[in-house]
Length: 275
Image (cartoon, rainbow, N blue to C red):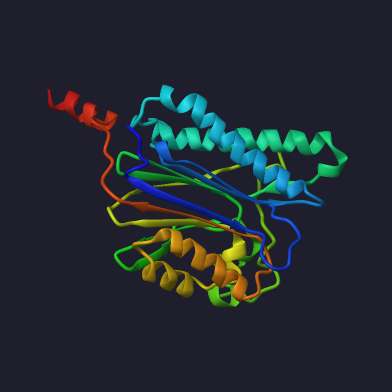
């Protein structure tokens, strides 16, 4: 079942006003409801290489493997769906690929990237992320952050040294504590959410969130909830109007209709217990 007519996905990436090249990368596979965003870091063009490698690996992994997993099936150890585990595995493999590429080239030594990916299946969304790129959801007028930054500043906010608003003004906000390509070991955080028709999901790089407040992002999405193409353009425009100090990337996904599996593994399992 193709999700292209059930989940609308729009991607935008922009160099911004201060950088001479774009180290962000975005990608999607609309038929399976997959979207991925990465914000690269490193000298010269290394960040661009790391982010592009990550996007390419995740998309290719799903192209070759997705059809072979048990859709809707649960992993009994973690309680996660098979799709979420595949998303984690793809990112872990991308980490290994970026790390090895960095070690093999002096010019690319130290390169890395954040990543945030979302996958829609069976009226649910799986979100996996590393770093300070974010995922949000707009539902019935309520705008909610679904991920937690892997950053020094977030640790200080958690410990009460900063409020969230004070953190926006700090010069420590771009010090991240977790990224792909820096080490062979990596923890990928995941979120699984039930979707509703009309939900709008936003994933973005910090080039947006450093320049535009959550309140303004909320307002722009609310004003353009029936036209996410315009919403994406307006988000990028707002970041540039506020200084455009970094590359700006956004992916928006809007749930148009329900997208259930014909019968999920969980439903089959409940049937077994009823019999």
